[in-house]
Image (cartoon, rainbow, N blue to C red):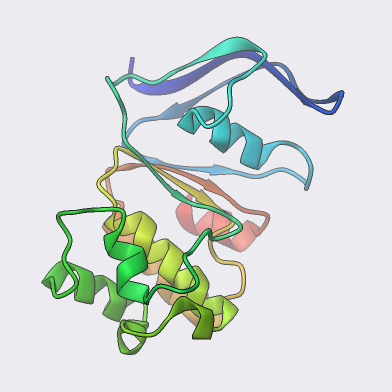
Amino acid sequence: MSNITIENISFSYDNKNVFSDYSHSFPIGEVSVIMAPSGFGKTTLLYMIAGLISPSTGSIKIPMDNPRFSFAFQDLRLIESATVTKNITLVNSKVHKQSDELYECLEALNIKALANKRVSALSGGEKSRVAIARALMADYDILLLDEPFNGLDDETKLHTMKYIKEKTAHKTVLLVTHNKDEASFFA
């Protein structure tokens, strides 16, 4: 099996049916884009794939033992009182504050000058890029990106998307977006 296979899952929130007998597969080693209107369960699907919540019925099969997930959450989930580098190094003990890999990532996302600033002092777009850097720097098998480009201007978004595409070549990525241009860039 070379796919993440979702078989006949069902899931409800507060008696609102989000999934009913839903099946789909996502290829391993590629970027898959998930698009649907708001409220159709895109984030819920990512949470179920990552094992953060379980479907009521059905199954999700991942063709590897103990897969490692990295997640850029829509709500960012950064530690506001910590610095940019601390937020990033928390997810991977192999990455140190002075590592070349870390600074290459920060530079590519145009946030290197912010490395020692507290997240609370950053703009929304800067925080989004910190969350993306944290997700990319984690040691993962599957990368989940939930609306990662929110708050980015067009130029910054394009630069960030190019970097993500380069860094995730031949890796398994599930990207949730509402934006058709973002979807076609990665598709």
